[in-house]
Length: 160
Image (cartoon, rainbow, N blue to C red):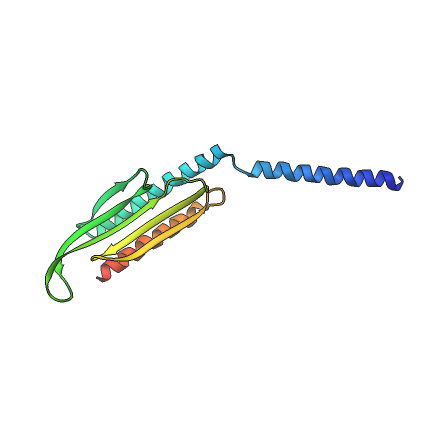
């Protein structure tokens, strides 16, 4: 085999390698429909997990009312409560506490985004926001994050 034959074989191997790489990339990239389906699956699971967690908190702290959130704001839930109580200055007053958590609607950036707010006795203490690429997202990490935020709220509420 002379140099010319070896050169043609090397070029062919390089072209085959490039074609294989392009095919592998095409297979791993999710189509728009696949991204939308994955988003919907994750959104449903996370919003159900949010609802379960919020209802468990409400069971431990009577007086909270659960509210389902859905639509342009996202999907999730909220707990709120008004308390008639004495403040630090000894005067009677009405105090508002609320925790809200939603999975934001899908956007053009193909990310899944959860947001939350926590207000205890008229003071906003938490503002959470976490997002990840839909194709790369790990649902278990989001569930862990949701659990941490809910536990953080419960601990702070119990301390007040």
